[in-house]
Every structure is written in structure tokens, then in C-alpha cells.
Length: 110
Length: 110
Length: 154
Length: 154
Ligand SMILES: Nc1ncnc2c1ncn2[C@@H]1O[C@H](COP(=O)(O)OP(=O)(O)O)[C@@H](O)[C@H]1O
Ligand SMILES: Nc1ncnc2c1ncn2[C@@H]1O[C@H](COP(=O)(O)OP(=O)(O)O)[C@@H](O)[C@H]1O
Image 1 (cartoon, each protein chain N blue to C red):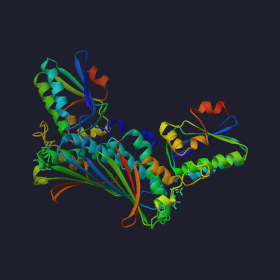
Image 2 (spheres, protein in one colour):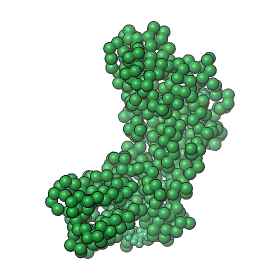
Image 3 (cartoon, chains in turn brown, blue, red, yellow):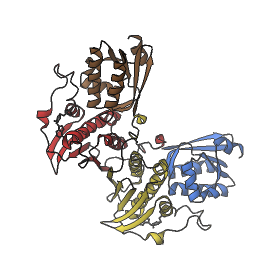
Image 4 (tube, each protein chain N blue to C red):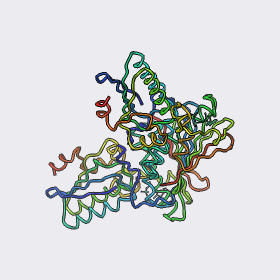
């Protein structure tokens, strides 16, 4: 499992490959915070290659979203499969995040 | 798991999909014997979609090969992956069968 | 290769009487979680639980129970172990996660993470998710603190 | 979906202390074999045994032991059961297949299926293959006839 980060225009795009769980969430957090510190404002996390997410992974997304907002930035999510969508719905986190069906949709509307 | 049979020219081609084991080897045997009874002489069994073969599966191949030879016909095998090849080598059945790397090769040289 | 090992097997094969019990022991290190989840998930698939159960309910609920056992129950002490027992039959999957801690009170420790007060909190979703994703979540003592998750076949 | 559950997990994760024990009980019906093999095979993959071991050695040797237990040990009597125990650690995989029969003598029952006399025989390759594919094949009595297969990690 790993996180790959690339810039697309002025948007930082992160792919979550494999699981986002207690064992690796700190790595995601640090990578995104590093970019935020460099002055980046727009973030997209793409879950098309993600297996499952645990509560600590959800927690990291919540805290990143808050930190990015505090810097006047925005965090969006894209490509949640049905199982992951259910996870966001159960926790009502679908009301907290901007969730796009596809990466393109998310990028367009930033 | 299943066996699909089709004719290519005058050759009966059987694909073994999944395992060839004690639970289904009789089905393969019967299908091939039915064709032999209809007068077919050339048989090719293709293992490109096969998982593993057990000793009873190997036994059915041996007995089919004998029965086909007795009718003046020929049985060839194709597309054994490395694991399946090992199985034939361990049992020295690679010396008993005509084994082709590809289906095309097997069909050409019949 | 895995498409050649259809977990279903022959469609005509009976399932009724097949019984599986699995036990895995790990040290208190969160890096083991993913592997244990994969072991149980593949079991779940092999006995033909619904794809959603195998891909969502079981992996997430089990991850939560394991994290809690490692972090809270055993305080990440590498000398302490976590034991996972899984039992599957034609009716249900039962998962038991045992740690060496003193236990806790599920009702007291579960809060509603979807409330306005809690929605922006980073933690507090573990027990809630287990309860949402499983048919029952129980806790009891048996040579350690045991959390038992039960999921009925869909 | 299964590519999203890499059986390996984090490359940095330790494996050393992970211990797995699995027990499966089935009635004496050869249609169960494929499913049991898939359960054990996926276990084998989850603890990172060599791909060849998971795809060839374990499936074939276990299939042989199961067929023999069902056909010879239990005479396909559906009232009789076969129990499979698998234990995996960082060193080896141990498989025990127990039937309700009277047992047999491995040495006496193993012949060389590669000899000119035997090569065209339909049967007689089971025990030979188990011995070729495993590091050891043992038989003993323990509330039934047990065949124990051991495979060391490559
Ligand atoms: N195995 C355990 N041993 C001791 N305490 C536990 C255990 N599991 C959960 N708890 C307690 O329950 C609380 C709530 O757990 P949970 O809902 O998973 O949220 P979080 O882990 O994010 O705090 C934990 O903070 C902990 O105090
Ligand atoms: N579990 C068992 N119980 C009783 N007899 C067995 C058992 N396993 C093997 N045998 C005996 O050993 C013989 C050789 O077995 P094997 O090498 O697998 O070849 P095959 O099954 O093709 O006969 C069998 O024919 C049987 O008599």
C-alpha cells in the first residue's frame, strides 16, 4: 500500500493504493501536510485504487480537511466505490466532504 | 469448473476450465469418449485455463490417451503452464504425451 | 492465477456441512492488521459470503477490533499478543479478538460520531462502525478481554 | 476486487511471529475438495509462501490426501467426516487430514508410477505425488487415521 502524489495544474492529486488504515494513515497525513506547508491550496484524494478504509483513516481525512480549510484551501474526494460510499454514509461523512464520482469531475469543478 | 468442446477442422478441441480433479474427471472422460464413439480420431486438450490437476485427473488423461490410440487416433495436450509441466515431469507423463507449447503449434502438426 | 481458483467451486457442491475455524496469533503491532484481515477476508470469500460482506463489513469491523486490541487492550506492548478466532458455518461468521487488557464497557465507550458535536472529531468511530457493520458486537472476559463480532449470512 | 487486497501487506511488516491454525470439517464427499483446497491455498498465499507452493505443491498434495481420506478412509460414507488442520508459521506449513478409517502403511502402498510397468496405469500416483511435492508425508493414528504433510518455506 502506498500513496502517490502528483500535481495537475494547481491541484495536488493523491492516489491511495491499497488500504488507508491505522498502519499507514500517518504517512498520508504527513504527505498532505507537507504540500499544504509549501503553500498548496487545492487537494484531491482519489480512491479508485483503494481497498478499505478504517475509522482511523476516516479520522485522518476529517482532520486534513479541517487543516486545509483553515489555510483557505479545499479537499475533495473522488472515485469512492459502493462499499466505500457506504462507509461515508454510515458515518455521515458524506455530508462533510465534497465527493465527486470521477477524478475529471472533481478536477473540472475546483 | 467445466469442459468446453469444439471442432476445429477434423480436430476435437477440449478446454479444461478450472480444476481437473476427482470431482469432475468422469465428466471429461465421458465427453471425450462420446466423441471417440462418433468416430472422431484427433483430440487436443488445452490447459490454458486450468488451475491444478490431481492424480485422478492425470489418470483420466492416461486412460483416454490409451483408448484413443486403440481406435487409431491421437491425443495431444497444449498450454501447460510451468506448474502443470512440473506435474507431468514428476510423473514422467511428459514422455507419454505429445505436449505442445501452444494450441496453434499442436493444431498445425497434427 | 487466482481466477483459476474460483472460490465457489462447483456450483453443485453442497456447502451446508462445511465448518471452518481459524486462529491467528499476532504480537501487538498494527502492521499485522492488514495481513490478518486478508486471511479472514479470503476465508469469507471461500465460503461464499456476499461480496459486500467480504469487501466491506468484515475487513473494516475486524480492523477496528484489532486496532483497539493492539492500541488500548495491549498498549502496543510487543510482549503482549492478540488472538483472533474466526468460525464460519452456513449460517454465520463469528470473529473473536482477544487482548491482554482489562476490558471496557461497550455501551459507555460508544458515542454517536454522526452527531454535530462529533462529526469533525478525528477519533471515536471504531465501536460505532463495528456495530453498524456487524449483526452483533459483544464483549466479555475469557482469559483476556474478548470482543466478539457476529455477522449472519445475507 | 482482489488486487486491492494484496496478500503481502506492507513490505515493511514483520511476519516472524504470525501463527495461523485452521480447521475445516467436511462430510465424505469429493465435491468439497475444491473448496477446502481454495481455503488452504489462500491461507498459504496470505502468509507469503512461494507462488509455486501455493499454486502447485499445496493444492495437489492436499487434494490427494483429501481424496484418499474420503474414498478409502471413509468409503464415501456421508455419515463419516474428514477433518483438515492447517498450521502455518514462518518456517513451515503443516497439513493434517484425518479420516475415520483404519489407516494404511505408506511404504507398502507407495509404488513408483514412473516405472515402465506402471506409467500407463490410471491410478497409483497419489501417495507418490504427495511425497514429491511435500517435504514429508507421515501417517499415524490419533482418534482416526491422520496423514500429515509438511512443507518447509522455500
Ligand atoms: N480492546 C479494548 N481495550 C480497552 N479499551 C478499549 C478497547 N476497545 C475500545 N476501547 C475503548 O473504547 C474507546 C472507543 O473506541 P472506538 O470507538 O474504537 O474509538 P477510538 O479508537 O477512535 O477511540 C477507546 O478510546 C477505548 O477507550
Ligand atoms: N486414507 C487412506 N485410508 C486407507 N487407505 C489409503 C488411504 N490413503 C491411501 N490408501 C491406500 O493407498 C493406496 C495408494 O494410494 P494412492 O497412491 O493415492 O493411489 P490411488 O488413490 O490412485 O490408488 C490406495 O489405493 C489405498 O489402498
